[in-house]
Length: 476
Image (tube, rainbow, N blue to C red; front, top):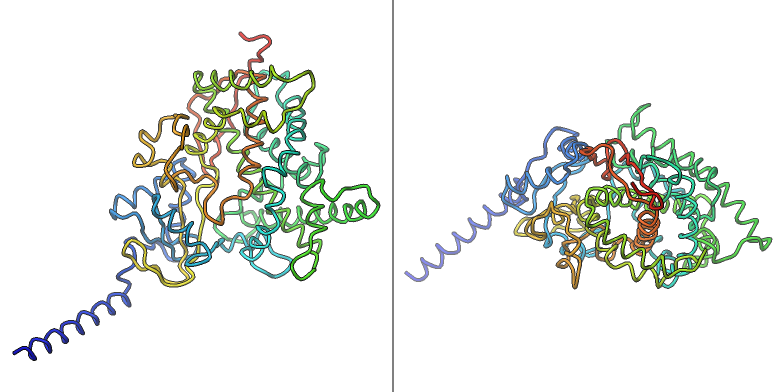
C-alpha cells in the first residue's frame, strides 16, 4: 500500500512538473499584459498618453487592469516588462550589472553613432569612470561663481526690461549656455545660439519611433546630431592647439579634462570619440534642468504663498552679499526651502520620466518570470504620482522633503543605484542659482491660466509658458 502511494506521488509530481514546464514554454509565468499591434506594439499609446500630458495614465491603467505592479507590453520595437512602485525601483537599482543592465532604444544608438563602433552602453560605462571628478561637490564649488555670472547675464539679456516673456525657450537657453560654458568654455551667446536650435531638434527625436524617412523627428535628429558633432570637432581641434600653446588650462572644463585623461591602457580618446561624449553630456546637462526651471516658474506663479517663502529665503542671502559679490557654495547650502520646492516640482513633473534596462539572465520578480534579453522599463511617475507613497499626490507640498524626506526608492527624478545621474549635484546648483535670480528680480503671473502640459519625452508647457513680469522695484 505504501509503495503504491509513493508511486502515485511520483507520477503526480512528474505530471505537475510537465505542466509547469509546458506553462512556461507557452508564455505562462510571464507578467500579465498584452503586446498590442504588430511592430508598433503599445508604443503609440505609451507615447500618446505623454503627448496628452498624462504619461502616468499608461502605467496606472494597466496596474489597475491587471492588479499587478509588473506587467508586460511591447515598446519601441521590443518585448518589455514595466516595473512599478518602490519595490520595482529597488529591485532594478540594486541589481544593476547583476541581473539587469542599462539599455537604450535603437533610435538612441542611431542618433548617437559612436565613432569607436561601441554601443551607447559601453560608452556610458566609460563616461561614468571619467565624470565623478568633475561633478563631485568639491569640484563643483569652484564653478558657483561662474554659474552666478552667466545667470546674471542671462536675466539681463532675456528677462529684464520686458513686460512678458515665454519661459521655456528662455530656460533652455539658460541651461544650454551654462553647459556650453562649463563643459566647453564657450561663452559667446552667438556661438551658443548656433548650437541651440539643432539640440532642440535632436532632443525631440531621441525617443521617437525610429522611422528614418525625410521629415520624421527621427531623421531630423540624426541630421542635427551630425551637424553638432562637426562643430564640436572644430572646437576640440582648437582646444588642442590652445593647450599646446598654454592659452588654455587643464582644469578649466570637461573638454580639457577629457583631452588630457588617458584610460587604464594609457590611450587617449580621439577627437570624434570626445565629440560623442560631449554631445551626450550637453543633452543630459541642459535638457532636464531646463524643464525643471520652467516648471518652477509655473508653480511659483500659481502658488503665491510658496513664492513668498522662497522670496524671503533668497532675499536673506541677497542682503548678505556686498555690491557685485557673487554667490558662493555656502550660500547654496542655505537655500533649503527653495530646494524642497524644487524637489516637489521634480516629483510632479519629473524631466526623466523613466528609463530602460535589459535582463542579463532569466529571473523571477514578484512571482513572474522575466526572460533574458527582455527590456524592463521603470517609471518615475509610478511612485511620484501614487497616493501610496505621496498622500494627496496632486497637491503641491514642499514639506514632504523636510526631515528624512520621502521613503527610499519613491522619489527618483535622478534614477538610482550605480546609474544615479552623475550630474545630480550640478543640476541642483543650476536650479538654485536660477531660483535666486528669478525671485530676486520679479513676481510673475501666467498669461494662459490653464495651459496644457505635453510630455515629449520631457514635460513641456504646450505654449512655452508665457508669463507677465512685475519687477520688484516698481511692483503694481
